[in-house]
Length: 211
Ligand code: GDP
Image (cartoon, rainbow, N blue to C red; front, side, top):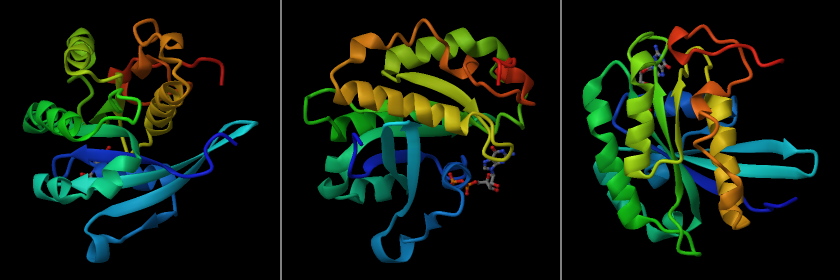
């Protein structure tokens, strides 16, 4: 059991992009509302990484510039990774992504000095089947330029790529933890093309891979 304590992940992005829906989809029933008392929602997820490893994740639903700004250092200290989410149907939410990333980078570094792993989620892909289809290369370039470890098209509504994106982020976090970053070659495997599921989102261009 590599991680006896929960690893904290932030889920960040503009209002309405689907952060809460993604977390709810991912953790199923284990979603608690703590907004009233501490100003943010969080949820717990137990991920059975492999037969020997159970990973406990605590996901923080961060909405709004002011609330992120108000998060205390206590939370920051525990953070191992983040998702930055935008809504593929609203370009303004994509334009905000770089701002979110810069903000995060200015506030968070791991104890070993490395940046926190951040995955970009293009959510609501069920709504915009062709938006990103021809933009894969641009997205790859964008991720490289802005220091994202990868990107996925997701749909909280249709449960597309949520688990896959999370496993991908956890893989990077584990690699960071073990100082094995070299063993991951994000350029070799396109993260958004590795889903083992057949999905209905045509823009994801996914095929079965044996499951
Ligand atoms: P948040 O403000 O970022 O937490 O966004 P919410 O999770 O509250 O979602 C905002 C709205 O978008 C809600 O009406 C959701 O039902 C809807 N929504 C979230 N994810 C998806 C998705 O993947 N596809 C579609 N079609 N709608 C979604």
